[in-house]
Length: 211
Length: 159
Image 1 (tube, chains in turn yellow, blue):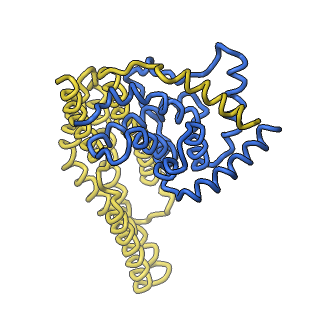
Image 2 (cartoon, one colour):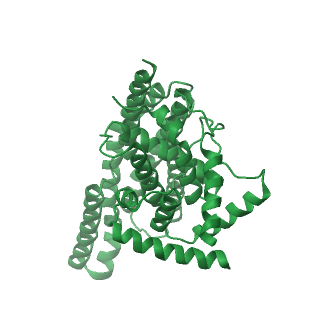
Image 3 (cartoon, one colour):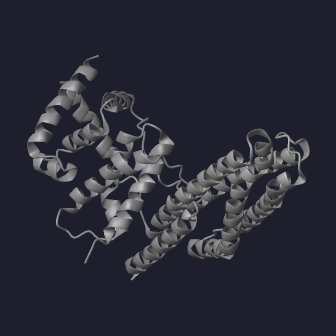
């Protein structure tokens, strides 16, 4: 009895949905385009997250340089942070430049052109990304040396050097692991290229339908 | 050589709508799932070799998308391109029907995602052989599962 009710309800639903929408190429185009645009939205959200991270980094670096929370005694100890600060500021403005360039583009009815333009913006920033990655790696390796003078005073030269070498080693291993796990790969560019390829396939399909 | 996407969607839209209804209680989620199924159908169209019937192929894609892809990574879809023409139906014009549907979906809601696909195919009056082909389960397994699902649904609907 209960299952009969279930079947009856299902048949009611089936009757209702059998010819609900008239699909045409334009509508199908819109559905696929919407799906492609999801990637762009993801990039925008990611960039907003980057803004926050970089802003926090700038604040922390300024606080370290001005407030001396680690009780640095020598000017040389500030060098890694002094180098990192301009790097982060440049990264912030570069990010802003890329983001603004992307926001200025409008998909209109030419999603293929839109994706191509975004791809070109990414391509222009390829060199900068490498430079920024190398800077971060260098700074990551330099930061443990900031604490070397304090350690020498506290535990002696040999132990301080061993301790610093361990920290540098850990940093290197972390960077290597991140590199191997693909943290420095631009997944969004790959995704955009895949979307562009899919979009072109759709256009071929649409042309077939029209033909 | 092959049926085009537009024709397929016009012929099998009911199937997609029903899968969306069964797997997504939320209206916006239903639209997202619809979009994803259409996308997956489009992507798979080139590799369709007519070894199975087109309806079997469509069931497989729609259910597979609902079960795996859509659930695995909860996507937030973009709606820059208005999809106002796609409205997954909710029965509001007939109170009795609406009540029946609400009861039905409430009963099915508690089933796990594989059981949902089996009951959908059963309600669509597919044979055990077809259900087996679509879900990849053996025929005997389909029979056993279906009996368990029916018993579970009977209990839920009696409450």
